[in-house]
Image (cartoon, rainbow, N blue to C red; front, side, top):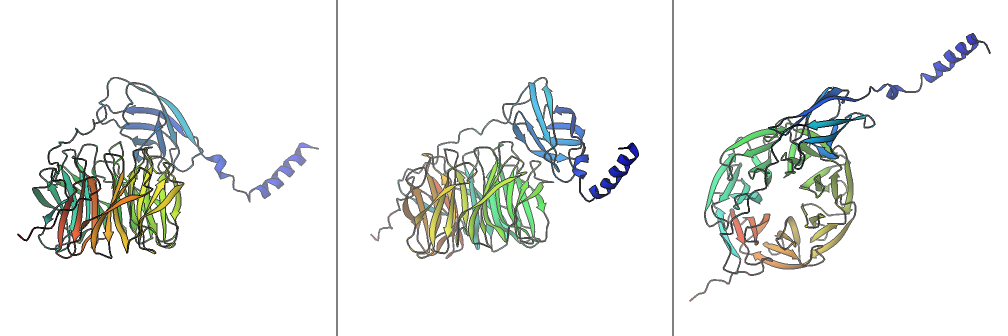
Length: 491
């Protein structure tokens, strides 16, 4: 066959080949040209080519994923470095954001000394132990109609902090306990610009200071408060997302790198979203969709798993299911998702990580009006054992969970039948059964509730008294909150 005939056949067949899309063969090679670590901030700076324009690249150092704070097609800022990475040779791996098949590996030399990761907070003081042996209930705020949507954490100072909605003024407030038993407290207004605080979640950063995610209902904004002291008397407020309607349900957690992650519901598109903070004040956060299969993301709660990655429990309103999403890496570039329980469950969830590193999810079965739990069999919660903890009447709404010093989960929740605050303390780490206790039944109490473990190892429960419009606190007399104070004597 002549060369001219071959050329004709080549051109002819080439005409048909144009119908196929082989543009992926032309994707440019990703190259890492230079990388360095800033000794003061522990941030990693990478220069190279073709990191991707549409999605953030994935960066790891010695197989430990780093949070990408900022990137272009030629530069990356990531970190801070996790604990344990110091001077010496390290393997840097960068994977393209818009094509996961393109990556490069680079040998990074870190010279000299870099500051270690911040040390863990000092052990809290043991003062303020509840020595009475019975549950002690006190009012924390009675200035108007206050106490909606409380969220509570124990600071590095060992003192409880509660963030909540002041419904009378539509403000976000905090109450900071002066002692571990909250015998004396200090209040402050964190944000009053708009209709603030309808959905609130509070966490303690690795610096021991609180951070708060909350929803501005009037302006339809998801907001973030970085506290500069343990009581949030001085704060920096940032707007994270300004879509048409975002942040209706929010959750916040702080990974080991100190950069908060926030789960929230996008009301406009009806999706579950996650915000990955790039800085301590969370300005310029990376926003990513987590689940968009229907009207999804109500009543979400977030925790950091034993693998260091976020995991989220939430309600699928379209199918009325309880679902969970687990980030496959620290940057949540991909997720494991699935339904754990089906049909009329999950309108109200909370998630904690047990001492064995496995998640446990407390939720409301609103079809049967029961309190249920899902005990995960693996860190990603691909499989879970589901059980009922309380079936006495209409119970289980708005559960809040914590893990006691003994490793046993404890859940505070609302008993709608008796308009009371109840607690279920698991009898074993897998929560196969629980001891049930009524903590407060004076009036209508406990619809809004938050629980934490105090420095004395006993549960503290912040909750709303609907009858009086007060924020109240129960300091439990034992690990199960089973010892109710006797009624006052008439004599």
